[in-house]
Amino acid sequence: MTRKISPIKSLSGEIEIPGDKSLSHRGLILGGIAQGITHLENFLPSKDTLATEACMRLLGVSIEAPTPAARIIHGKGLDGLKEPDNILNAENSGTTLRLLLGLLSGQPFFSVLTGDESLRKRPMKRVVEPLSLMGGKISGRGNASLAPLCVQGGKLNEIKYRIPVASAQVKTALILAALQAEGETILEESAQTRDHTERLLSEMGGKIQFSDRKISVNPSPLKGINLYIPGDFSSAAFFLVAGLCVPHSKITLKRVGLNPTRTAFLKLLQRMGGDIRVISKTISAGNSFFEPEGDLVVSSSSLKAAEIFPEEVPNLIDELPIFAIAASQAEGVSKVTHAEELRVKETDRIRDLCLELRKMGVSIQELPDGFVIEGPSRLKGAEVFSHGDHRLAMAFTIGGLTADKETILNGSEVIDISFPNFFKLLDKLQ
Ligand code: S3P
Image (cartoon, rainbow, N blue to C red):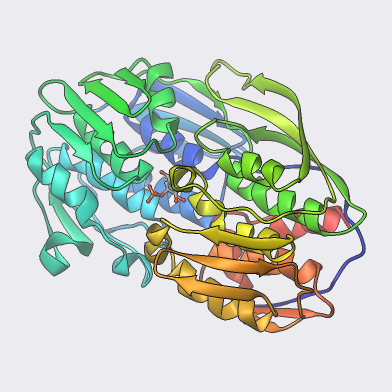
């Protein structure tokens, strides 16, 4: 699908950011293996999370959808799932595939997991290797490093393991396996990553302890909960940069998740001189008091360039494509390094970002593990391609709002992966 994006003069108004994608996946999976009912409010019904939902249904979990953003999950308990009678298709979603590998390794049945062309190229060894150490039996292409992957589930043993890649997906897969293992599993992260699973498991009565980069998990049953899912900070990020870079703008983003393991990008934009205020910060309502959220008010600002510290990278990895747009409008040289993970996301985000942003007149240099941008530059309206990557497509759209003339975005339908009403909300602010 092709979208034409016209430059605009200002943005104003208030929008509610849709629910967090990571929490929506986790709510479905943990709700499915809990005992009793889990209610999800402000669930994100996007292509990725709907893939997880379809997989959980194939595993025998009954899920009601009274409204598009609500789910009622009838938990089966850890020993109530059934052998799926078809292949589990994670489509484009790395979170679905990796998390389910962890869960299914401990289930007493056979399953096969696959995904779309992009997901079938993404590295799975990072999950398969530690799961094998726990006794998991996984086979597949490339010596079990690429989907499709087959899992012959069974008994798992505990492990003590340092996770070499900074990945919340790997950590969560291991936690899901650890819930079904014999004894206590102790995990250490090489860098702290998003801790939604740990927080949610605690809320659901799981035996988990976590602080900083250490997590210990004991096999334990979970209980269903009522959960309000705050807005996705990574989705809000596109509007933060739009509000900063489109002149004469002032916008309010309501109920955005502000879990400290997700908000490094907020601090970075403020460091760049971005006028973003956090108002009415609270902890999510509902029966769960576990994730902070708040309203963000953002106004147009003159930005200065920034260098991203290596330790910040894991907590803003999904925001780097939209950071590139902010950097293109900032005075000076901005630099990202230590971000080689970007090369194994939905696409090679370093290569494709550089390729497309050059068409828009951005002075961007590709590095093996990041990029360097010299700004500010007036963006040029150009014909760009999403490369099948939702975050690239949204970043190019925001860039297009500040360009000198119309931008043509090819492959815009991919935005449905994480943010189906992105264009509707953008229209509301114009
Ligand atoms: C996610 C973890 C991150 C992130 C992805 C969602 C999650 O991936 O990039 O969008 O929900 O756990 P990695 O764990 O591969 O870093």
